[in-house]
Length: 325
Image (cartoon, rainbow, N blue to C red):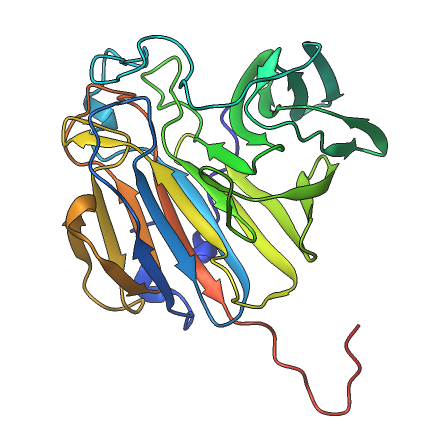
């Protein structure tokens, strides 16, 4: 049996936006640049708001997934100028490689991986179910159903990148990641990053608490995982102050048929008609929801999911006569 379907009250994706409660509209700036290399992120959309308390990210199958019979996920270096090696401008910091099981429960498994080299030297402390560790470049979250274990979420602690995907469509045995995202204070260190001071993970139900080096926290909760989609709720503690973008989509676009995301669809308010443009034709958006995806079949990471950002909420109002800690 597959995991529970996404809760209808959350207003999943495109299915029920008009029934959502009033939402905050955020500013989204397109920082993308043209590119020819399918292995480089040239698509960037930065999310900003004067203040934000919560929002949601959903990984949803592309519209054409029911027609996919042969997935394509092999690297494509044909348009790259660095061959099949890591990018020559990246620094390389050495580490003792290891793979560690951090948690293995009834419904969730968590694995930490340290690579032999990584482009940043950071070693972020990680605590899982009260067990401390450090130095992982990749944290994997697996959904377990009987003897089946399927990866649905990854986090790179040293630079703050995330990827999420739904369980595979029922006619496919597996699916692939595509676009990445950042959440928290966006900074630049050669490329956009989020600097994390430490991470605390509580499994089943799983929540991931990020402590940022600039102060403040974000609590990321997996609210549902299914063959429809995976949903993450993000809550900033305290509310995010708006001095920097609070989230960013990172992806790749070479052509409509060679992209991890090729178009943006957004809503200026929940009941409004959708606007849709190619990612390179968008300058900025003011939206209550936006979905980055593909309607044209891609020969790169064919089954990779769309990513939808929505349910933006302002910080909770403080009621007179009450103390707020």
